[in-house]
Picture 1 (cartoon, helix red, strand yellow):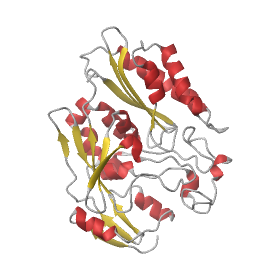
Picture 2 (cartoon, helix red, strand yellow):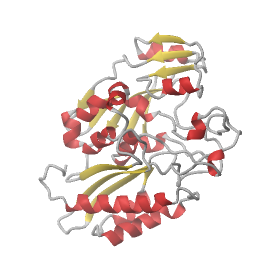
Picture 3 (tube, rainbow, N blue to C red):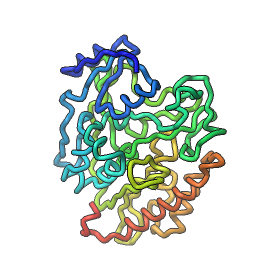
Picture 4 (cartoon, rainbow, N blue to C red):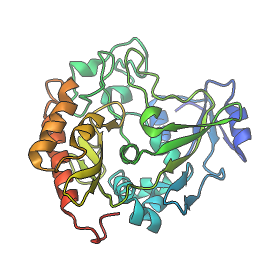
Length: 337
């Protein structure tokens, strides 16, 4: 790890002034991903601007049922927040499915959303990687790709997005709040925050240089919705998703799906909102054959590689089980919100 400077910013303006005009300056939240990448030599910033003490550390539950989560809130207290557990169990479940307790206590929400891919070629600086070194190639396509993406990929990159939380937030139609480098503010849906790789996989988000995430706004959950996050991985602790699912289901009195939201993790370079499947299922009874047919349509555009085609069956089975279980839960069990 090369030498670097460190400054703890006292306010957002100072933080943004420090990084403006310095391509080698980066924001530091919990550091659980950034410091690892620095140790590996994947990134070598000259200046770390610590934004973890900025006043974005509150969870604000609102009267309309929405919640504003500050970017500096740590993963562990968010997962344990009574309001989150009661109204948004999908968020708590996603956080508890990711990392270790120690990492969750240090990691911030803003940093969680901006963590980098766990593709082995990205982490190994002795190997080519278009995401790390544009134009150098993507050896994963012909190499080790069992854990990598099957949707939204390109010939230039097949990496997956690693965040469990982001998958849950996409299913909840959450929005990221951003303070732009000129002091203005804007918001972007979490779903649209991330870019597909195309021919420029090194560009991962819509954020401009100096933009600072200040929080995440989650709208009220649909009336009567039951929701859950499930994650399939190679071991039960401290492993990234092979496939994960964030699902919210509302069933009408006629037994048909009044509202359904599906997001997948571990299958694409960004959290994948299964809008095609949702559209096919809305208004229908949630029987297994209907869910499987909807997921077949959703996955029709997949580009699996020889060693990760199993993810298609896994995603189909996981969503079918989630929808079946959530639709069967009676109102008032404590699961339905």
